[in-house]
Each structure stands twice: as C-alpha cells, then as structure tokens.
Image (cartoon, rainbow, N blue to C red; front, side, top):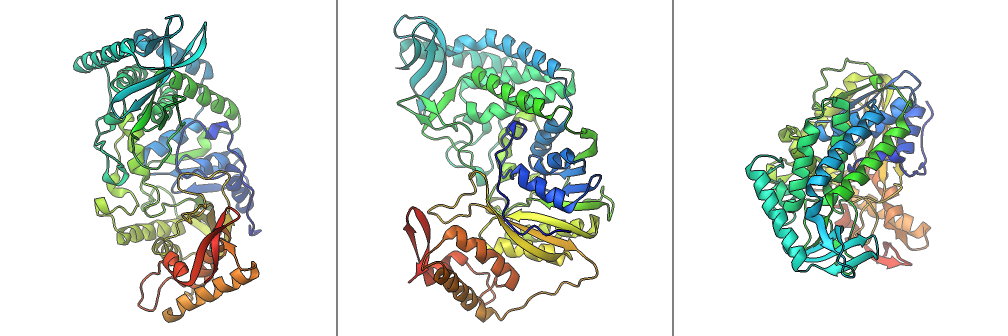
Length: 528
C-alpha cells in the first residue's frame, strides 16, 4: 500500500457540497485521494463521525461501499438528502406550489414604498439595532435599487406583521421551535431558538414548514426541508448588518448561537428561492453518478458499532470531535429544533463543562470508539483521521485512545485547507490553518510499543527542536510552519507531559522560551 506523505492541494467544493452548511467539511479531493490510495472498487469504507457525508459521497463516486455513522440526526439528514435519488421535476413543482402559496399570503408583510414614486415593493434586507427598525433596502422596477430609513409606513407594516404572527400562533396555524439553547453555544441574551427570528420571519417560516409537512412523497418532502433548514441562519438575527449599505454577511459567521446588536432581517422568500436553486444545482450534479443503495447511513453512537460485523471494513477515514472546538450538537439545535428531531445530547463526545462533560469523559468515550474501529476493520488495513486541536490534553486523549485500541502509527501528514473556516486559519491568535492526517494500520503481528521519555526532558526536547527549526529558517519561523513540524514531533516522541506528569500547555512553553511577533504580515517565532 503506497504511503501518502505530502500535502494534497485542496480544491474548491462542487455544488453538491454547498447545498447545506455544516462544520469541518474536509476538501473532497483530499478525501477522495485517500480513499483511492487505501482501497479498491467494491471495498467498504467507514466514517464513524460522518458529519455532512464527504467520505460517504466520495466513496460512492469511486464505486466503493460506504457506511456513515453520526449520532447527530442533522448530519444524517444532510447526507441522506445529498445521496438519495430524487424526481427533480416533482421536487421543483412541489417547491413552487409551497413558495407561491405562502408568497401570496405573506409578501405584503415585506412591503415598503419607493421614496421616488411611492410604488409598493417588497424589501430584500432590513437593518436593526437590537429591537429598533432602522433601514430598508429594496428594488423598484422603475427607479432600481434604493436604501432608505424605516418610516411611518414601514412601522405600520411591521405592526401588521406582529399582529399576523400573534393571530396565527394563537390559532396554531404555524410551527416554530422554542427549544432552550445549550449554555456552551450561547453567546448573548437569547435563551430560546425562536428568539433568533423576528415575528415576521416566524410567521412566514412557521407557515412554510407546515405546508412542507403535508407533502406526501418523502424524498421530495425531505429535500424541500433541506432547502428550508439551509436558509435558516440567513433569515435569522445572527447575520451582522451594515447600516450604510443595508447588506448582511452571508452565512453563519461564528460557531456560536449569537445575535449581534446590529443585525439583518432578510426577506424569507428571497432566501428560500436562493437555497432551492443551490440545492437543485447540487442534485443535478449527482444525477447518475453513483448508486445510493451502496451506502448505509446510521444514526447511532460510534462507541457501540454492534450493527457492523467484525473484520468487515476495508478502510476508515474520519474527522473525530476535537474536544471543545466545535459543539456540533449544540449548534445543530438551530436545525434539529425545526425538524423536531430527538437528539441524544448525553451521548455526544465533547468537552463541555456546562453539561459536566469533562476531559475524562471525552477520553473514555474516544477509547471505546477506537476499540470498536479496531474490531470492525480488517487486519492489515488502514485508519486515517484528521485533527487540528492545539490542546495537548485533547491530542493525548485521542492518541491514547487509538494506540490503546491496538493501532500502529504509520505516519502523520500536515494537510492545508482550501478555505479557512470558523475553527481554522492561522492568524495573529496563533490558531492552526490546516489539519494533521494520521495514518494507522491494524496489524496484529505488530505489538504496539509506547515510546517513553523521561518527563523532565520533555520541555528541553521541545525547546531544543524549535531552536533548530528557527535557526534553519534564518531566525524566524511562522506559526504555520512550526506547528506543521512540532505536533508530529511531540506525538512521535510522546512528549506530552512535564516533569510533574501534567500535560503541557504548548502555547505557554513557546511564549516562555521564544518571542512571538509579526514579520511581513506573517506571525511567528524567533529566539529571545
């Protein structure tokens, strides 16, 4: 089996990966190259932390069988709707029916007047300062785009939208979630999901989802629901607004549930149609590309894979949870609440002090996962996983879990990302821009031998090595280059702990021993 030892240049995602947001989506071509390297057609590929399904989809594209597992029902929902066959004609016809019905019923709630001719038109965006309705951006067929301050007429329409919402809510003609937000993802004073939407948006969204629920064809219904959930962040109060242009940033800008003081209210109908077009384009790309029946999607706990036979998997590629880096379940409340999904929050593998999920719990669960992965993988086959958390406690927990499970480390590859996400990017805060891909082999003939170093030498070994790298780089090494070398070095030499047996804070050690500064717009390290 050929060993991948170099960074693979990441490519931009095609449209079928842009149908719905999800965190930590890996470059599809990188995943594809690993699958092609470690498997042959007909092999079975497993991803126990499936997320949005990149491993599943790339496996299917290359005539492999795929098993995707995720305890988060939203991950399963996104993946299933991406790979499932769909009657595109029925999908579009049904979407248009739902869209037009609700457009006729609610579009007047977005009405404003052109400041030049007084013509009534629906606004595209509005800007709010907390609860104050400030400005509107709209398009007049005669005079084009305009931006104006919200006037008495706009306030009158706003009042009408509130009355409409209250009436529909009282008559139980709309649905919206009121789930309490988990503290770990809570950023400001919002306590429940419905507080992230205006009453105007809730009236429209609550009516649309009721109509979607009435669709009889399950594949069509679920794909329209995917359009619906994919637009939710953009029609929420989480989108920061620009008071001058009355534009809002697109998408979910941070990995928290947060409503900025200056925020945007977007026209639900504009966003719904836009997301439909995105989903339609993505599904068109996949027509005839693979057979969905070759994939098995399981909404189960990765610590217990009893539904998978021992020695039945040819290759495992996964992106395990990074301790406290991304609260997948807490953030997915934003979608799961609207879909009425039952979520096993207790089973989530995460470090979350608010739910008494400590590092010990994280470590224990990860050990169970890798024990199961060792069981289901065939002998002399490979496991690859990506990781980018800089906390050595998390690194140690993962490495102890995988080596304790019986796997033998083959190599570590630093893999850059195509585009920095909310949890990646090497910036002045010294965070990692890419991932490390760890390649392990299950080989029962090789006994795993832990490399033991005298703890008192750990700091000395690390400082000495960093000094040599700085010297080779003319006295300055970027954070990106340093961590590309340092993390594999620490893992290979087992240099996690100090002389007292405590897992080291690598950031503190570096700052004690070296200077951190900016040179030519790059941040990095030099000798003191």
